[in-house]
Length: 126
Image 1: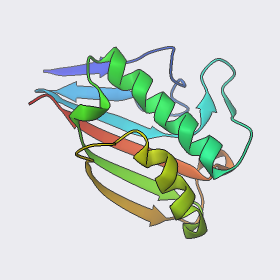
Image 2 (image 1 turned 90 degrees about the vertical axis):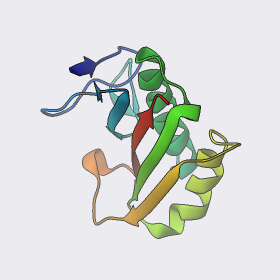
Image 3 (image 1 turned 45 degrees about the vertical axis):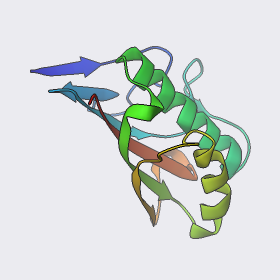
């Protein structure tokens, strides 16, 4: 059965999608951008500040659904510039100290709202 996950502690969807969808013990978290939930504005700062905000948004959605970063099995990181890869990794890695998930990282031509990073996540209850 499909369950829609939504929390005010993460940015509201800015299009026709859900923050996350849970199906049969698997949580699919939509790509998160560095919006501050209370203002729906992009956080000020560079790639490190934006990556931290994205990870905080993911954490809020995971928590709302009863998951944690230890349940994450796959992430996809989209970057506006691969020159930001190392700095993004430093912040991202702070959330996965042990047993990090599988991951892909891509540079894309453009991201919504002109942000520097977007991350989508899949978590599984084992």
